[in-house]
Every structure is written in structure tokens, then in C-alpha cells.
Length: 234
Image 1 (cartoon, rainbow, N blue to C red):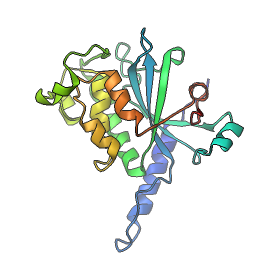
Image 2: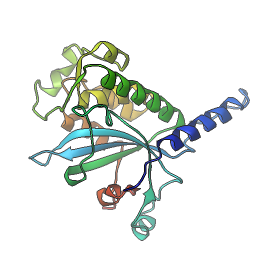
Image 3: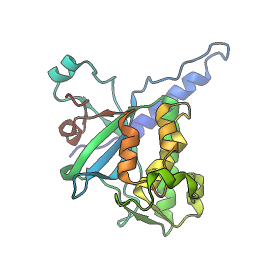
Image 4: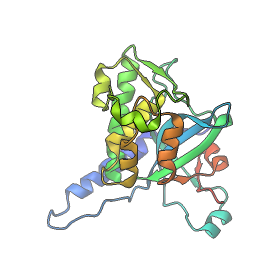
């Protein structure tokens, strides 16, 4: 079993942030993706083969992945991933959000900027701490629709930000994923606008999967199970 180096990606991010601070303010800088950070959302399959139990993870790649179809086919092993952080990973024995390789439905990948990765590292650390140090009840949201999707906007959101989790006593895996994605993604992104349309409590795993599908790329699940990053080839 491979040893996951969690400090590597964060240390690299801090070095990159120091580099940005040293640049002149007169020179505009485009959003940096030099560290090859990818946000992954791993969905498991329920008894009806529908997406459920989302697990949110941040990974760092040693170099940019291959996107050309021929290059991807020629390199079946993909690029080795370094896990930077994972939402609610090993927070407590009863609140684990773990990846079950035998039940993976799909893996969605989104390239994020170095700044967004930094926000995610902080957000995940904050959520993980809140879940682990308090008597926090974490449950899995089912695909049972409580209220029609079209009516979600008419209902109060309850816990609507990551910060409000400090006073909450319970949450679902989908709720945490939505709140964290709303917190870390640049609001100008199309995917961010789509995520903000989801009701944190009423949205189902299916709703989250549909919102991400249009703006993310699917990964090859066989490569993912061996800790490798490779886009799916259809």
C-alpha cells in the first residue's frame, strides 16, 4: 500500500504563494495552475446504480496530465497522484467518508487554480476539525427527493456556509460537499454558479452529480483505483 504524502502539495502551494507575493503589483498575473491541482468528487453507486456517497478530495500531480486521446491511450497507467486533503477523512470511527474501490460509480475531475487549492486546504481542515472535535452527526444523503427540485429556492437553506458549521450539530455528505464547493470555487466560474443553485440540505447526490457533469472531466476508474490520474477515453 502506498504512503500518501499530504505535506508535499501544501508546501508547494506555500512556496508558490510566496513567489506571487514577490512579484510587482504593476504586472497583472493570470490565475495560476502551475501546481496541477485537481478537485475530485468520487461518487459511489447505490443499489439502483445511481450516484451516491460523494467524497471530495484534492490531488496534486507532478506534471500536467495528458489530454490528447492518442497520448492517453498510449499511456494506460496515467499520472501518479499525491493526495493533498480529503473532506472528513478519518474524522472519527463513525463519521468516515471513505472511498470504497469496489463500489465506485464515477470520478469527476476539475482543474482548479493554485489559489482555489489553498482555499480548499483551509476549508477542508476547518470542516474536518469541526466534525472531529465535536459531537457532530454526519449522515449519507439518499437519492430520495424530499421536495421537487424546482421548489428548492423557496425553502430556507439553514446552514448555508462553511462558517455556520461551527454551530451546527449535523450535516449530510452532500451538504458538506456543496458548502465546501461554494466556499472555494471562484464565483465567476460556470460550475460555481451551477453549484450555488443547489440547496445544501435538499439536494440529492444525483443533483450534485448532474451539476458537476457538464463542467468536469470523468477519470478512468481503473487507473484511479491504483492511485493514478488518467482521463476516461470513450
